[in-house]
Length: 263
Image 1 (cartoon, rainbow, N blue to C red):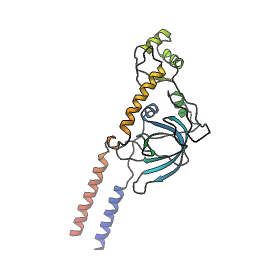
Image 2 (cartoon, one colour; image 1 turned 120 degrees about the horizontal axis):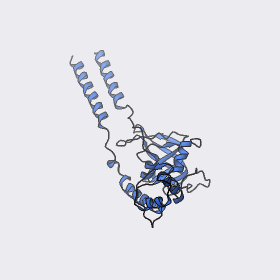
Image 3 (cartoon, helix red, strand yellow; image 1 turned 45 degrees about the vertical axis):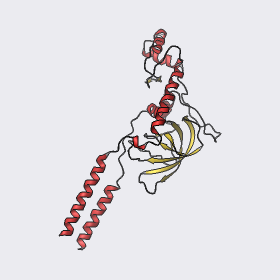
Image 4 (spheres, rainbow, N blue to C red; image 1 turned 30 degrees about the vertical axis):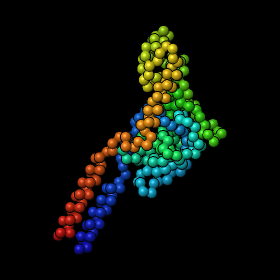
């Protein structure tokens, strides 16, 4: 009889281990421009505190101190980020370790903020690749938090100036000014910054490239807000493979337990 109880305890422990194993998060290979484009709010700041949810594994709240606003309306210097970490139905997880500076991609949720379905980007003044991303991404803002007087924003590309686009595009299309103007007025789909091709748009001869980019960005932002806010049910469907695996383990354990007790 004691042996039966030991076996049953072992099976229950196995079930618990399988059920409580950490979820697998996909590697976030989404490019920076896409994250900026699809996120209503993009902030630079430092994680001050990280508090795990008591009744939800692998999910936590964060107190975040905002240093700079790259996209979105002005926020307070200190904000709360909820539902970070692993969220069912989403592809990517967040880490947001305390004491580390990040570029985060958020949306408003009730009276706090929550992450979009992207992983944050760790930021350092010594990280040239991150600084280069900020320099090459068009139409970022350079705003301080509402109740914070110190400007801690790094250099960013706040607009795509025609001269900058001229230099880049003409270098790819023969260096001809006339060719460049034809390129802009032929509804060719490209936003270009640095040496990278970006989002598609149509540019006409009587509209400044910056205005055209901003109009399309505003339209995209409005669509994203309408789709993303309070819409967990419209996110990517969860991965059912792990759930099926867990159910199979539980079923096998139950059968083995029944056989042991019958004997």
